[in-house]
Image (cartoon, rainbow, N blue to C red; front, side, top):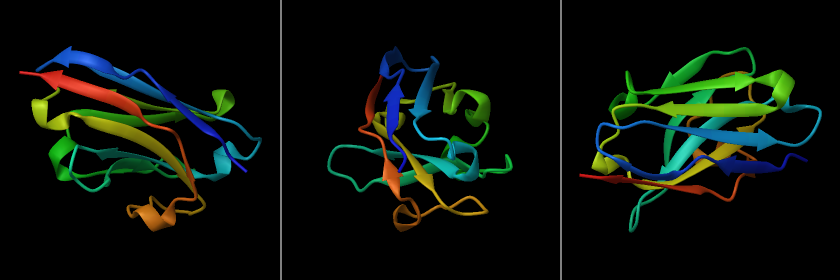
Length: 123
């Protein structure tokens, strides 16, 4: 069982930066692939970026070069550094944990979810 708690969301102007954190419980955190998803009002939850247990990463094209995912297994924490934020990045951001050797990109591949943190980017 893994419990995930996100933090770091907030209101930021376009072009600004935020860093989200996701703290995980459990001694097997390092064995999980971790992902960040987001859900904007009226839209489906979508994959943003993920990191495998070994540190491989994958991001969708819309955030490449702006968002960076990283993990600190000693702290049981995964981070999402978001730079050059745009109004279209506004959403609730969720972290998730999946038991996979690669970077899962679909909702069904993730078994544990956080409660989400709101990110609002003003124009």
